[in-house]
Length: 162
Image (cartoon, rainbow, N blue to C red; front, top):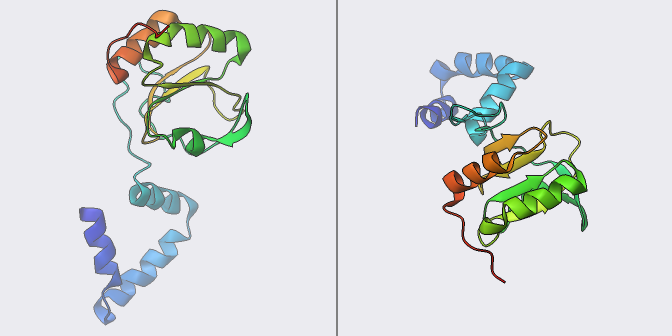
């Protein structure tokens, strides 16, 4: 609310705001200030509590990134389009098989996608539908840690259909 009020105040016409607008324009030319303001406006600077054993990436917003899946190149935003949690396996085919097996009880609620992403320093990510990271793990991904994260964020495991 305060951010919106500040933006409205800067848009008011009149000489009493002109000096403030000029100063603000100068500040926005600074990369650090521009990044900070962008994170406020787009709400990407919010950091959620990753919990006691949280990975440094957990709780942060995962910007759209290029990914390569078995179907070819795609972007994170495309994989999030269905509006459900996304479990990205980023540590190769062997790791992806283990990820699918460990997460099978959540496959009805979670998209499980093995992918390559050069820009992500993790082996697996559980991405919320809003683009925030619920959980992240470096290699090797432990089945117990993955199951615990899926239970917290996606509910109890269900037997796989079959």
